[in-house]
Length: 303
Length: 300
Image (cartoon, rainbow over all chains, first blue to last red; front, side, top):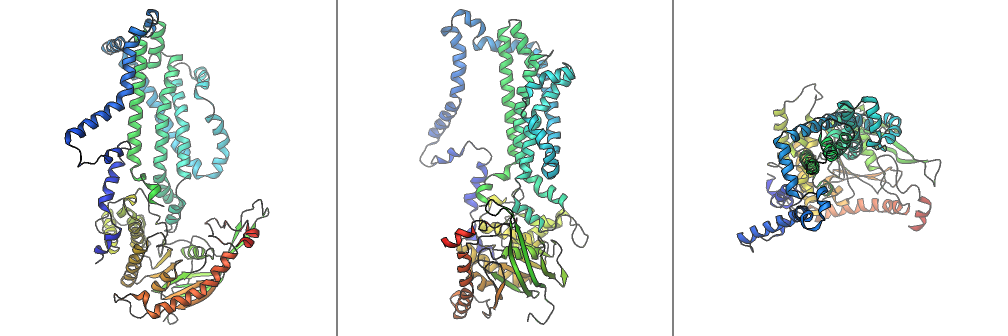
C-alpha cells in the first residue's frame, strides 16, 4: 500500500557504498578513479604505484639504515650504528636461541596484566563517577593530581614499595593505562545525546535500564578510544620500567645488550619494541572500529 | 462530538514556571512563565494540532502531557487520572527522530517492547521482531529492518521513529514538530501517511507544528497558543469534509478559509513574540532571549 510512495526518500544504491567505506577510512580516493576510462592493467599499475608511495618513506629509511653506516659514517660510528642486515642477523640469532621469545613473553605478560587490570577498574570507576555527580565532585580533584603526575616519575615509588619484581611493573603499567580509559569513559557517558535520554525517559525507563540501554552503548566508542590510547602507553611505560630494573623483558634486553656491548642485539630489541607497538595499535584500532561501526556519519545523519 | 464522552486528555488551568539561572545581567535569577491557565479537553481518537509562536511553551505543554515535567498549577489528566510520570500509554515523536544510532531500524522499533510490559508480560525475541516488522511495514519501511539510522534518509528515520512509538501500542501519540526537518515533498507524503495511520489505528494524536498549512491539513481542531506566557488563544474546529479522496485539499476554498483564520490568530502573536525577542525554551527551563531582553526589545 505504501511501498511505492517510498521512492522519493529512498536511496539504497547511493547509500550502499557509504557503508563499505566506513570499514577503512583510508580508501575513499579509490572511488575517484573512473572505472570505465581505465584499463585493468592501468588500474593495477596505479594501485601498485600508490602502495609503493605509501611504503616509500619506510623503505627509504631502511635503505638509509643499511647503506648509511657502510658508506656515509666513519668506521668508529659504524660500531654503534650497525647496518640493517647485521641487526636482522642478530634478531634471527636471538629468535633461534629462543631469547627473544622469552623477553617478548615476559613483556607481553606484564603489559597484558597491567592493561587488563587498568581497563576493568577504570571503566567501572568511570561509569560510577560519570553517573554520580557527588562522587565526581569528591574524587575529581584527586584524580586530576594523579593524572598529571607522569607515571614514570612514580617508578621509584613503585619500586620501593613493591620491589623490583613483577608486582611493581604490572602496577606501573596499570597506573599508566588507567587514566586514558577513565577519562574517556567519563567523557563517553557525559556526552550521551540528551535527546536520546529524553526519548528513553518518555518511555518510562528506570534509571538502571536507561543506563544499560542508552548511556552505556552510546559511550562504548569513546571508551574504546581510551582503551586504544591506554594500550600504547602501557607498552611505553613497561619498556622504561624494564630498563630500570628487571631480569627479563624487551626493555631489559635493550639495556643489557647495550652494557654488554652487543650493539646489534640492542637494535634488534628496539626493532621488536616498535613492531610490537605497531601490532598492538593495529589490533586495538580494529577492535575500536568493530564497536563503533554505527557511529560513522552520526554527525551528518542526525543534523 | 468531543463533549459527549469523557475526554481522553484533560488539561485544567495548567501553568508552568521555570526558574532562570542567575546570570551576570540578572544576578538574582528570574522566573519564566512558559504556560499560564491552559484549559483544554481532547477526546479519545481526536487529532489535535497545536500552533503558537516561538517560545510559547508548545514543547513544555508536550512535556507535561508526556510526564517528563510536572505542572506548577492546575492538573493534567489522562483518562481522568493525574499524569505523574512517563508511561507506555503515551508515546513521544521528536523532531530530531531520536533514534538509537547503534540499533538497526527493527531494533529501534522494538526498543519499547523490551522488558516487562504494562500487563506484566515479557515478549520473546521472536515476538518482538515480528512486531517490529509489522510496524515497519505499517509506516512503509518493509525490507529496511536491518538498516542502521545513518543509512536512512530523514524521512525514513522519522518513519522508524513513528513505528517505534506505535509499536508498544500507546493510546496517545504526542508529536513535537515531527516533520519540521524534512523537505517539503517528504513532509507532504508523511502527513498523508500519518492521517492513514491515524485512521487505521484510532490513536489520539496531539501534534505540535510551526506550519499553519500542516496544522489545518492534519488537525480536526487547531489550538492556537499566545506568545509567552503561553495561553490558549482560540481553538479552531476544522471541517474539510471527507478527505479520503485524492484531490488537492490545500487549494480548496474551505481549506484556504480555515488557513486564513488560523493565520490571522497567529499573526499578532508571532509579531508580539518577535518584538519581545522570544526564543525557544530549552529543556533546562532557560530561554536564550531572557537575559538581554532589555535591548532586544528596542532592536526589534
